[in-house]
Image 1 (tube, rainbow, N blue to C red):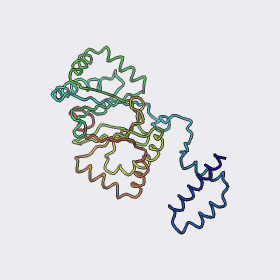
Image 2 (tube, rainbow, N blue to C red):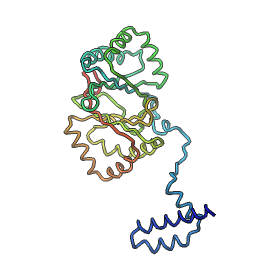
Image 3 (tube, rainbow, N blue to C red):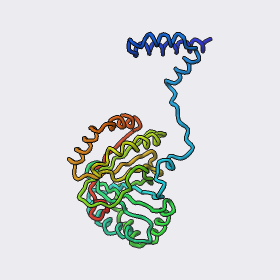
Image 4 (tube, rainbow, N blue to C red):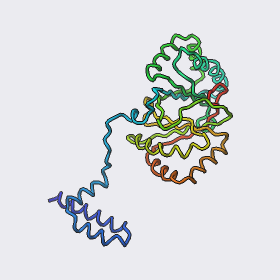
Length: 286
């Protein structure tokens, strides 16, 4: 009896909510619908207000969203440097990292290396690509353990750092693959912490949204995390300067369809961050 009363009360509440929220022209139809519906349908409708339907997946989102034609893995490093050591840190990075990049015995490529200009201060950001995925990453790590120059570099570097973290990433299939470019440019790394379970939705929307951001060749690369902080998305953009960035971003809002895609992707985000970065002289992305 109590359950029956609760169901009836819930249906009445929902019906009252509809009457208050609906335009007057819809009320006659709504009265007919609520009066003629069976209680089971009312209960089902009421439950749908609180239960989110999830489309079942039969494959990992990494297989659904990543590029099939390559097996590249990316590593994104964030190094927070002691303020008084940033110049010395940049100097040893520019001496050692290009040697690894150029050595054909290492199946990896230095995509870019930067200092953060706006965002976290005294921070270095490095992006590496491993051609061959996890086996290539393991091979590089094993070889570096026997590289005396790198071991000396790592020891000197450790005295300069306050903290460091990294993430392993895959690239979205619909983004450009990062390739060296001439400068001068500034780079923006926009990082999004998504709500768990929303990566597929994000990919579906941005597969359409990216076409709105290709006119100025500003799209460098798009990635999503596999190890480290999960459900993280990183978009990397290049601009001539801050004013060009502002102009390009404002122009997107005048393109039909952009505002709709922004409307649907914003609720997927828990947190977001923007870094403006300046490339080091030895960075392939200038």
